Image: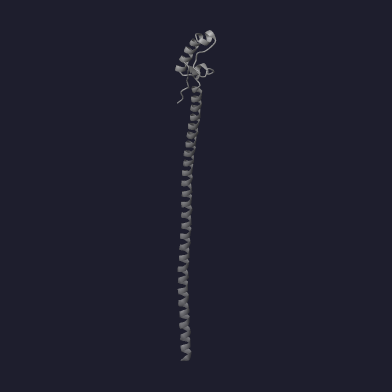
Length: 151
């Protein structure tokens, strides 16, 4: 009996070993499938990440280009406005040197008056003492100092 029980125990152990080998093989296959599935997800995640990063980069590149064009347009407009203001200022300065119509008429009257003025006739003036007699004729009208009007 002991030999038969030994052989039965050996058979039983062999069956247990075979059963364990099958379980190990099944678990190995399952584990390999989990690993393969994880690698696919990992690959998909990184592929999606690359796609999203590329899309984001393209979007920002487009927006940056658009903002850069807008910035250049505004810079050109600002430069144009500054040049126009500079030109307008120069024109105003040059126009302020042109006598106004009132000054022109006063100059004509003054030149007519100078021909008959006491200074022209007898060599001395009866002009008031507080008036600058060295002032330019266009600035002096009837003994008063006239300043140019500038806006």
